[in-house]
Length: 305
Picture 1: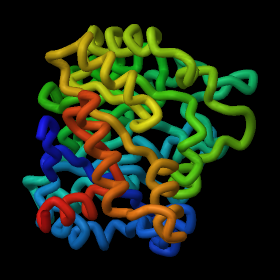
Picture 2: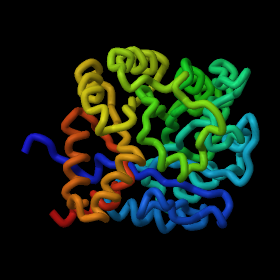
Picture 3: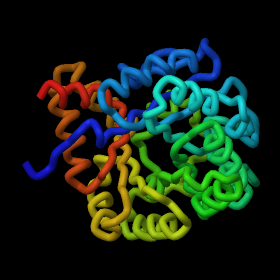
Picture 4: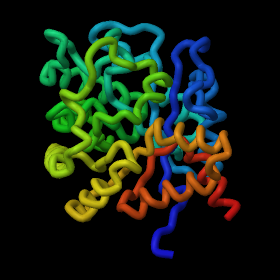
């Protein structure tokens, strides 16, 4: 067998609600839920028991504002979640997503000026958020806002704060995809107006992916990511060939997850086989790591194989 999949290749995303009342099942993502901070110790134990090495955290704050200030609050949902997970399982690698869309009352990824996201005004806020997560104990931060220069701004801010050892997993190649729909319900981050095509990539573009990845590596990214996964296997393969030394992750996103779940619930395909085939395809294309909502299930399938 040319391609081997292991639990060590997987990263489990986790949604965390600041208010306990918001910790509930996600209708469009069967089997996925928002956790309360107090429930994270048990979830961390389950993930670690399956030999999954890392988690990726997304927060749902109790309050939102135009700047997304809850993102960098010292006692915000993600800093509290990081501390709770690290207290329960210090060996679990904690990756904190860095974006403002969950924290802004307009649902966009940064500062709004004239109904558009202002790139340069957003950078210091992303950097401030990354430093807050690093101070709470995050091992890596994962900027997902697709702002030009975000990796450089975050790297400089981390270094200035004495957090040189905190790595950056950059959403370097993130497409303006229709496959994000269920995530926006899960994270309560659908934009109130417009869309994100001004800063996320056109699905028709592949050469642009090389430029985006190269810029992020030059600015200090430690790992690169392609998002979504299955619709962009060709892009994963291109990046693997172009940057052979760079660790490469791919995100099997919410829409990919929900499609498999919906079809399996209707008896149209075998869920286990579809999960393992899709994850193997992503790894075969060149991903070293796969962020997937199926991480715990896939780890169990591998254990029983």
